[in-house]
Image (tube, rainbow, N blue to C red; front, side, top):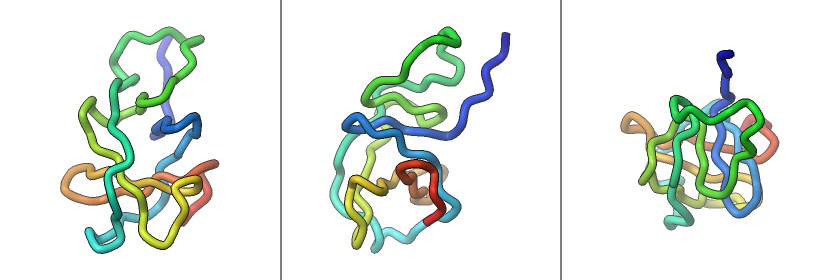
Amino acid sequence: MMIDYVDFVILDGREYIRGASARARADVGERVGVVRCRIEGSGASADYRPVDGDAAFLPPGTPLFAVRARPMTSAIAALRSGRYIIYVVGGHPD
């Protein structure tokens, strides 16, 4: 069986889904966490429940950042391929 993951990150018990836009460094605040486990390619079973620090595609060690002018309960950012990508709770576009 093949699992097709949505681009997500779990932090502080919240699931953040990749938003539609990238941001400049000026939009990114302090470091708030780090990815501990990349689920895609890990061999996790279909019934695995992600925990804090899990991400679908971000490699372990990827820092997670607050987004300026947004509460951490609604959005975080991660540096991916040289761009800051916004992840939002519930997958709503930013």
